[in-house]
Image (tube, rainbow, N blue to C red):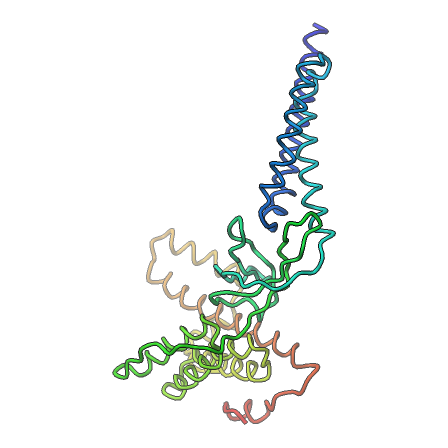
Length: 319
């Protein structure tokens, strides 16, 4: 019985050390590796010699066999973690590199860009004005302590000045200007995008999406005064176009109760009623987006000159 307990204890000890190594690798090491240039080369240099030495000791030392598997695995992955941790912590400041951008996302009150870096997608938390879908961004890559480059959170969007004009269809004037504006925005040709969004707004001055998109261009280029005015214009146009019933609903909404009622209508197959809820939810989401953008731009203009908002708020037009 005693021998069985000893064997069980040895097995549990090895399992515990392997599990601890696995958690260390998944929770701590993999994120460091994803932010490191060519991580597998150094990982292989660490693993193979240690495994070879451990195998020799395992064959030659009987006592080592009891705990050798677990301790070897834990030692390897602890050493791998320390290597990447020190490589990143003791890195020297490097240069900016242009990296392909996959996506830009708002998650609650945080903003992320997902860039294509070595091992695949790498999420970087950024400030609001940098959370914008373009073709590429510039990210500072530090020089790691062990020679492996490490990606940082220092992200910037650099405007492209050499912008090639795509084909313009003059038969669909408004749509062509909008398509060109979106094209230039993604290619980081922000000045050209602003011109086309402005033209769209001149052709259709009641649509809030045009000042909204133009405001994004101003925000990305850190012209927060103009961005603030455009976001105020977009929110004002959106609010002015709501009917009385929608305004009454929005002003008295408890979001949690509203969502419960929405799902209840889905369960009861009241799809027409659910569609009305969706329309109100979309309006709420748009207004909340404007609120966040306006608040962000207001913070940014505090240290500089304030925009002339008095005439805008009174007339709905730029001063």
